[in-house]
Length: 81
Length: 173
Image (cartoon, rainbow over all chains, first blue to last red; front, side):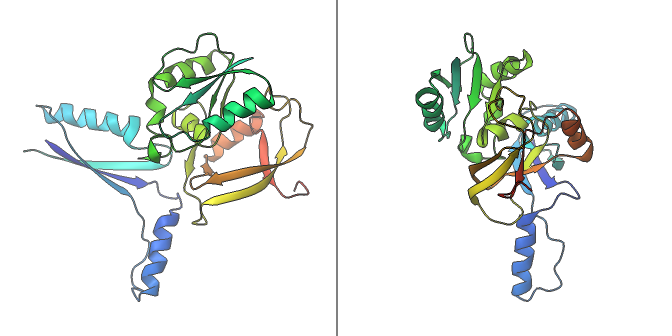
């Protein structure tokens, strides 16, 4: 199985990187683009037979290492082979 | 005092720390490799600055799971002094020993300069030779030094007098 994990800064946490990139887009004339925020996409494979087990492991990995729950949220999708 | 300076792959202020603690203050200082699993005999532990594991994922996130960190957490829980400077501080927040988290600097710059700080709590073992409200000039260098904590957590720190220094101007304001 594969998993795609999206890590985002929590709502209300300022994203200076996103703000800088958004400003750069405005300078290039993309004035209709706003509220740009930058997160992370983590791709991985997981060799578990049951999707339930895989989900549990992924959530555990996200909480333990892949995200910092104080400032980040995550969502993920599991893609079965 | 027997002090351990923990060395992670990517630590780069470990020798500065060693020099300050040994040559300047005259302690019995030893490097502790991040894969070591014992702190027995040490009376204090310092996590130095640098870029442990290249700051990959988040600053301090991977170092936090080094084998020695289990011991560092235990060491702190038994009431022994642990000091984290710069990347060491980031590792301590990632490990949950300190509350809060460090985010990227708001002004889009890597900050590398001297700043003034005011002593808020001079009754800790790290600050007991300072006087109340004493102003210090210290060097800082960081890209992710923007400390974040929620209101409830901040109140707890204030109530417990756990804010040791505050940034200030030359006049202490």
